[in-house]
Length: 335
Image (cartoon, rainbow, N blue to C red):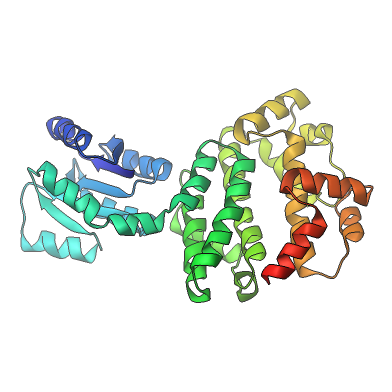
């Protein structure tokens, strides 16, 4: 299914476009925007794969708007719609890096051909594995996203050679971060520098998976904090206290809310309990220790605030589906 978005202020054209798209198989109109601000919010929320935009949007310049969309989402196909054409328009369209301009009225067959002539590109950008990850985040299901990231990373290592992994992983990470409303290129570059994708990380599927989890965790945090600002204190507390036992009461105190209210927010924005989330964050660190250090299981379990190695192994198997020893054996075999 190809996601399509329209940016146009003409009601009759909006109506005609909807009707044409309804008759095209495997297409989904995710939204119709009339202003630049509305369009950018919609793009950030829905990440359309194809955008059709009128060249004039009231006092706004449609080409300038689409240039911004291209800067945020380089892989998105952007087509400019216009009632007229001249050399200056063609020059501006080409300089903006947009994909093509179309003279109105435009036919259903033309729309279909433009959408699907680059269909293979769209499919490469979001195969079934990456789609599962994005859908998990749309559903606000942290554990599902956590598991989908592992499958996706293994798939990339099986399918891509070393030279292509970096672009693929950074492209996915950028797409994830752009799910946060208001995220721009400057902020995106900050996170790519903060979580640098080093050659060492790119050499191991497990390390790349742990790298991707950092972006997933950041996206969930920001989406939650946008609604509940006080949750930032609790989430930051977990990150800085993963080496200790953490209680729900401690976190509620950090956020200045009741334990029950804290639990309800986690269920809504993470789809798991507070305790589940704490364990997953600790296990994320545990796997990094296991593949990057000489520490044994007992040392790692105590370092992460688990009083007994046996309890740590039980928790590890519950969430990871295998024991720490099996995880290490599989890592060594893959290496």
